[in-house]
Image (tube, rainbow, N blue to C red; front, side):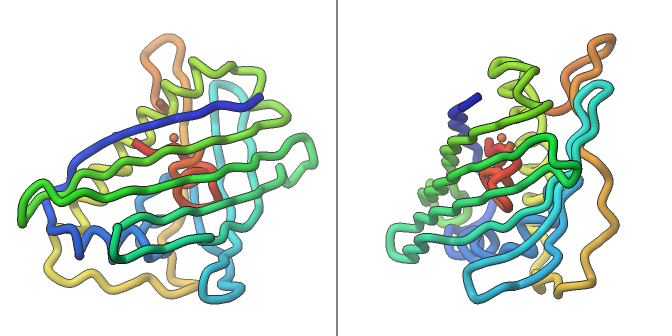
Amino acid sequence: MAIKIEKQFELDAPIDRVWAFMTDPYLVVSCLPGAAITEKLDERTYGGTITVKVGPVTINYRGKAQFERMDPITHEAELVGRAQDVKGKGSADGRLVTRLLALDKKRTQVTVVSEVALIGPLAQFGGRLLQDVADEIIKQSTALMQQKLSVHEQPSVAPGQEPATTPIHGISFALKVFWRTVVRLFRRMLGMAEAS
């Protein structure tokens, strides 16, 4: 199953700070529930994991993501990712394009376009449900990004010092959609979480 997700959100920070944040994989992953970087393979390629829970289904992915393009002049970056379910029951491939636009000296608009192909258990939930899940992930991730950007200095998190991860909790049919981007991290890091 292939899905395309396009999200837009605003951050209260200058474009150069947002660009530095969005091109630092450790900072981005620190805002994605259930995600962790496990290794730096080279200057643009990282290995990592993400745990996704949708209803009764929990899937642990392991994979890698690579910045194919990073243009600091146009503030556009492209990330590709591929991951396998650690139990061998599925996979996810994604491409994430992030574009920044300065709204004024202190605010930045972020546009994320993600194309994700899913095979296995997550594919059974359908595109509409996964769109809702992506919306919720973006909402949570955006709040965390804004919080981190509000801090005057934002040091990168070194490998092995990532905070403990908790799974991304998905749909609670009785309550509401918890996980509305696979990947802004899908679209973000590992091409597994969707962007705004």
